[in-house]
Picture (cartoon, one colour):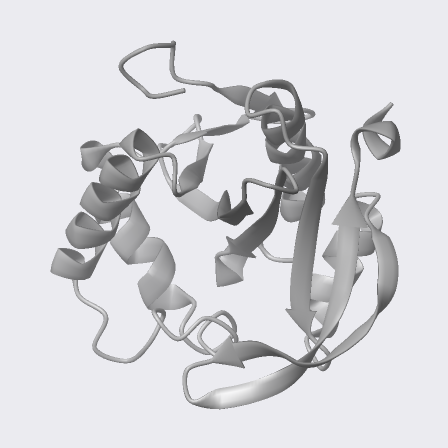
Length: 189
């Protein structure tokens, strides 16, 4: 499936004015604002969100996300507040295992919007896209063992905790143990 072949998927996150949709070039300023305010909270777990993050990084990420969508290597979505156009976060599918029809699902929420239940609503929407559109049978969520916020999100989204994978996650130069969660289509029924 490519963006040229099918309509761009878009999912409303109810209640409220949030929508999950593929990243667009016009999102660069809103992504830059979201990342800039989130260095302390998001940056600990996602090394791209760092001191020195620039608007050009947002432009490059969006171009990468769109090109990777075409190659079916990454399906990255913005979580956008339609009321004001701000980016509340991001969610996406990557690290596909075509043989086993599985993928990784990752997410982040900007600092000022954390704790509002945004990611637990976005995760099932994107997992459902993976199951129904991409033909996946399993989605994995990995969270650093110490990342309690991400672990709570996975559980609230309905993902099943499977255990701790030793040295399962690399964040920057750090190799960490990771909590492994999974979603299968039956979990969303």
